[in-house]
Image (cartoon, rainbow, N blue to C red; front, side, top):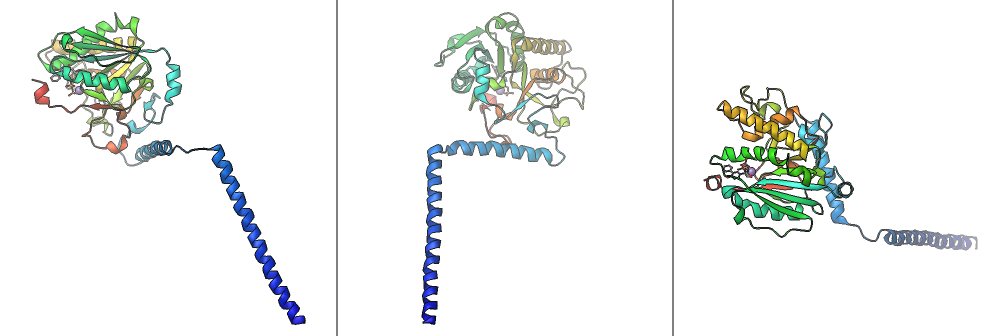
Length: 344
Ligand code: 5GW
Ligand code: MN
């Protein structure tokens, strides 16, 4: 009896134990389920493409930080601030809707030269600008060409204007490229101050390939040359001959800027173009020409008149360049061209 009772007790306690465990499981399951149901009510869907994009931005920052901290290479361009505390614009460093609101009503000009065979690059540039450049803002395209009658107007959004201006076609390409500075000195003094707040100057053999908006606006803005963003100061192709007005002594300078994209307030571009044009004329009188024509003069100006904003190589890229893994967004691309064919 005593044994039986003992047996009964053990089997009973087994049943009770199992029951308790089952109840605990049941409570646990219910809690989990209700939590999930609650959560799914608060957060209906997760935008994974956005999450992935955010991770991409984080990763790009981490990669840049790692590179910044590693080795003895000069990697200033990977930073998000210059030593004079101007922002270097990389993806993820700005909130475009905040900036768009700040720039409500801002009038922006795009200055571009398309003479001789380079007229073929104009329509693709303008069409891509309609997709990506300052979308939603007031834009005036200032196109300078020797072939006004051949220009095909792209389909343009409201608030966007195309202005065509006649310009003579210089024989030498170096002169074509440099004449842009002379034309800028005239238009930034007379016409543009009445029509626009900021001017963006670009090459024509380019296409917009991703967002380029008001984040690039500032008093004086220049773009880091994508071929030299990891280069040492000594490697920059500045003009180093003291005889040239574009002279930059060894050891001076910060970045090598590319003349295919720069901009700023109209009055700042007036000052810049006057200085560069005067330098070009001084050199001409001495029968010399700077290493990279107006780009050399532009670089000289920017070494001694620091830009207030610097654009990362996201803003000028070329498919062939090395270290492209560091450039997640390719916003403005150089068009591949047959140099021999377009220049003759
Ligand atoms: C440029 C070089 C050789 C022969 C002709 C030209 C040229 C330049 C031209 O015939 N027509 C013309 O409008 N240009 C303007 O100068 C374009 O806006 C062009 O984008 C800019 C700079 O010349 P690029 O683009 O050939 O210079 P890289 O450094 O981009 O090759
Ligand atoms: Mn070009």
